[in-house]
View 1 (cartoon, rainbow, N blue to C red):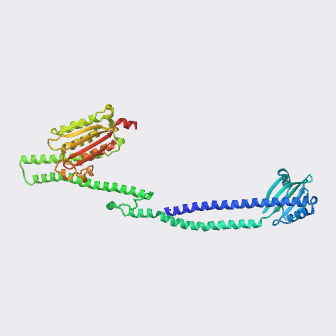
View 2 (view 1 turned 60 degrees about the horizontal axis):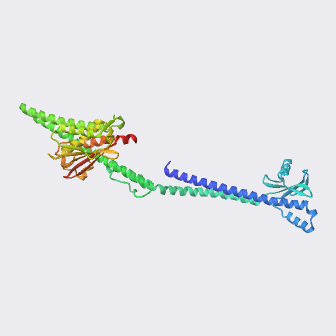
Length: 461
């Protein structure tokens, strides 16, 4: 069932329920009021009958005349009966069955006043004393006029309910159509968005209602998808380029070497060049494997307690072993009083790769003779390493792509590298609930900041 039909049905059901309850309340209270009011009128007729039948001989002629006038102001289809204390009928007026039984007479003797229905006839009985004797006086009547009015009220309520329900269904259908129009518009706009049209956005995102919030959320998701597709496209393009270059070089060198016989030294040169390209391909393959390993589920990584400063010094030593001529200095911005604040929880091998990649990037992009600097900083809940170089810097439009594997800015393409270091470091740090930020200015250098949560805060949390 469509939402429009559901809304219409729910709307109509709620209104119908309210109308039914309202009609029942109106009818019930009207019926109770009519019944109670008519009982009071019959009670007065019983009292008038008692005075007329039992007291006429003991009053003046004027009072007898008044009793008679009151008595003959009868109710519709009125019938009265008077019984003595022993249950013998002493007076009867009017036709009709009052349903008087010995049980009712006994009940009246006990309760003094009795009200009951006999079919459509309402009956009131009272105990009346005269000259020291008790009498049982019954008066009854049929409220034909009010019953007809009550029946008319029932018809009016039923017809009104049916007619109102038709109006409510039509109004609910139109109301639901109007209410769902923004959703229909959102659906139409979403259907126009495909993988090639991720730049399109929903237009209903500027309001304050729930639909606008939905449109804003959907637009934010499209922003992330568009960025993801763009990163994927950039990754494929750059990876293809990085893989194609050494392969093309190897194939070219080997084809040239095989075109004619060569000297031993020439073959050795070709083999050395091919070996260098093969090593380059191995580094690329290892980089891709490390990225895949850094993308696994965090629960599958073996964690241990590590001192962050020792991890940084280990990475520095490895970087200097690989590049003995490099210069890199590490210091503390402020050494904490409690050394436990330097403890982090993580996988030593993965974190070492992340820190080493950041340090090697700083060394790689620092001009000859310049020092790359690292600074360890202990914050309230994190430990931070800031690594600075004085290299070429990264343009603002390239900064948003620095974590895309194989992406390299145009101004550093002549520097050896594959564009794997920062993306790999980012994924490793995310696995450890850490973070990495890159700030750079052209011709002024780059600062990379990596952070990890302190272990004792993580454990207490």
